[in-house]
Structure formats: structure tokens, C-alpha cells
Length: 534
Image (cartoon, rainbow, N blue to C red; front, side, top):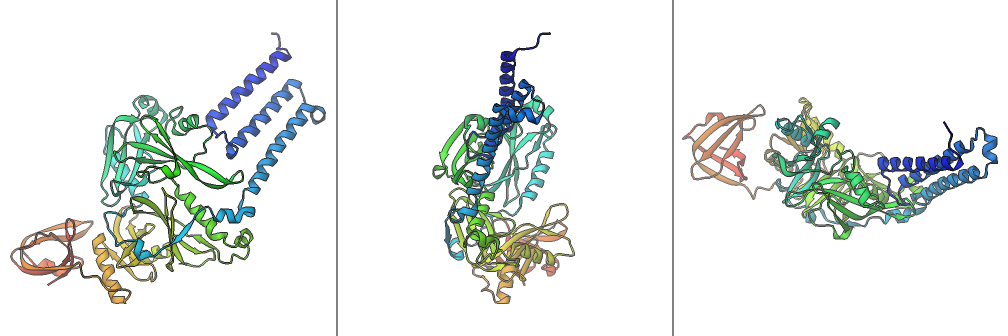
């Protein structure tokens, strides 16, 4: 067999190089952008491979030949130069020399808690966390016998505002490569929507399946689809949302580097990709549609505030003296407000203390940041305090939400058992976290908390919303909810239905239809919250 000549070997080498570059690019899909570290790795890899092929062609076997060959020497210097530019660019883009610019990535506005955070509306706050949502989603999927063998539920569970309600949505994914092969022509047939206030879980079936998702393998993979449409865009964390009409979209934030080559990351644009058709809409961040809730990833907002708090007196002070340095606490949660989703987290000193000096709300669509100067316990300290009230039951607290009750900043959290099911609710006063109220229901927990605020002198107990009714019992029925007995009754002259937990009002067992009773209560949407029985 005749060996290829120099020209033939050169052609083969070029073909191999182009083939390797195509495979590398298709698999890693780096942005063709000098601000993308993946692009630099792509460039260095191609240069190194080209030198290897050249060395094979020249049959270079030892270092002496390598040093004597001008092409290889120049190529090596080029690679080292590219690496040097990358390293120098990284240093010059870092907070070490740009502390002031990093602090200016966000603008923080100081606000008053009672003016911004309105009295709690439980239809607007999520009573569950992501883990609980996953349990509900998996349980719902398990009941769909026609889909469960072919699809699984994605772990995304993006929290959004949908028609004025806090909702988590997540798509289905193919259960395996084989299931993808047999179903990809029709796409993914549904997504799951969970109302985080009522726990209502719905599997929303689509007339046309989702064809662009993270579980696709080739060109319909959402990341590859975006890369081929926008080869120079550097995308941040994608999220799955639904429009006001229930149409599934991928929300794709585009990074903007404002400090040197690799520093000062923020969001400059956002691409909306229809998960069914693959059609995209490209917006400047300030023109992002109102229904989009997650243009700025939560982790990016947290990082930007940490720059703001830690670099107040320069980079070296943030490492050595740390005078005046603040940082976000571990963990964060979401609050629905003004038809947007806000990231909530506490602010604490960089020293190892257990208290917060305030907290921030950061808007994921508009980039607005609000700071509230309220000292109190860290979130995990409040969680420990709540768990201590039910330590005999072994319940675990979820990361708290920040709510307003009687103009008191309050941590609200669910208490879950070992199976991850919500069993009770807890409210903890932020400034005096030893004051904890526990209830089987949210209404019961709130009633206990308001009573506790009045007894401890923290604030006036709000009894203005309560009403009284006296009359004969017209109907009474008993039920067991999560192991606790409840009596449901109606009273003549009143349309309310009263839920009376036996654990709180043991005397209710003495009453029957026709007996006269006086009830003090707070009207509710379905059942009234009982405050007192006589």
C-alpha cells in the first residue's frame, strides 16, 4: 500500500483537525466570544492538536528536534502566549484591582419594611419548598399510568408568579435514551404545575409536545439549539417558565461582562425560546416582558450583593481587616410581590456571629435591590428554634420566608417529617427568635403567633378582624386530619363553617346539634379560624 506524500498527509491532517474541531465544538458548544473561558479552552486545544499533527508529519521524536523546528517553537510560544493572555486577563478582571467597579454592579436602595412588605396574604406566599414540590410532582407523575413508564419529572421546578399565584413549574424528561428514541418524534407531552399556596398539583397535557429541552440529545437539545442560533452569546442559568396563556418557554439570560475580559458579570439580554416550536425572541434586559419572572438568576444576584457588601473598603480589607464587611447568609428563598419574583436573603457580618443586621429583596426581572435594616436572628437560628419546639416529633424546618404579621417582620416556615411531608407550620419573630408559634394549619399558627405577640408585649394583638356569633349548632361532623381530630360545625344565623381542632378545644366534644354555643372567630375563605369557644 502506497503511503501518502507530504501533500496528501497535509490534506489528511487538515481534515482530521477540522473534524476534531467540529466534534469538540458540537459536544462542548462554547460561545465564540473572547469573554467566554470555554472559547479560550477551545482555541488552546485546537492549537495543541495542530502542533501534534505537524509533529507527527515531521516525525519529530525527541526534544532536540522539537527545539530545532521553528514551526513547533513558534506554535508553542503562541500557545503559551494565549495562556498568558488568559491568566493576565483573569487577574485584571478580578476584584483585586476592580473592587469599586464590582461594588457598583448593583444599586441598593434602603427601604422601610412596613411600607413595602404588606400584611400577609396566604394566597400569595408559597407554603411549600422545592423539596416538597418534588414530592408532589413525583406523586402526580406516579398516578399517570400512560406516561410514567416513558417519562420522569425534571428537577428544575422553577418558582414563578402565574396569574397572581406562586407556582412551581417543571417539564417532564425522557426516562432513558431508549425512551427518548421511541418518543422524540412526538416530543414531551406535558409539564407539571404546582400551586405552592394550595398544594394543588396539575399535570398539564399539551396538544403539541415539547421538542426543545435539556433531555434532548442532538440539535433539539435546548443548549445546542441556542448556541447555533446565537453563536456569540454566553448564556447564564436557564429556567423553565410558562406564559400567561400556559405556553412553556425557556428563559435564557445572556451574560454581559462589564469589567475586563472575564469580570463584572451581569445580564444584558434575555432570549425567550418557545419550548414547543423552538422559536426565539431576543430582548434587551430592560425590555423583558412583564410575565417573565427569572431573567436574573438568583445565584448571580447573591454574588453581586456579596461583592457590594464585602468590598466596601477595598479588596484587601475584605480579606484581612474586614472592617465594615457584610455578606449574605447561607440560603435564600423567593417572595411574590408586585407581580414579580424577588429573591430574599439575610445580611450578616463576615465575622462568625449568629445575627442578621438586615435583609435584602432582589427583583429577578428588573434587577432592583431593596435593603431593610432590621437586626435579628439568622435564618438557620430561627429554624433551630422552631425545630426545638417539636423536637419530640423530629420535624425539620424548611428555609423560612419573610412575612409581615401585625407590622412585625416574621420568619414563616413549614415543619416536615422524615418522609418530607408538611405536618405543621411555624412562625418565629425575627428580632426575638425565642418567640415561636406552632400550628397544624397556617391559620392556627397565625392565631397563636398574634396571641403570643400580645402576651409578650412585642406588639398589640390584632383582634379587629375577629367576629362573634352565638346560637344553636345546626350541623356538626367529625374528621381526622393527619392524626388529629377536628369538628366542623355550623351555627344558626351564620354562614361560616367552623373548624374546631380537638387538640385546642377539648370541650367541643361535649357539644351536639341543638346545643347553644358562642364562638369568636376570624372569617376565612372556606373555614373560619376559631379564637374562642364558650
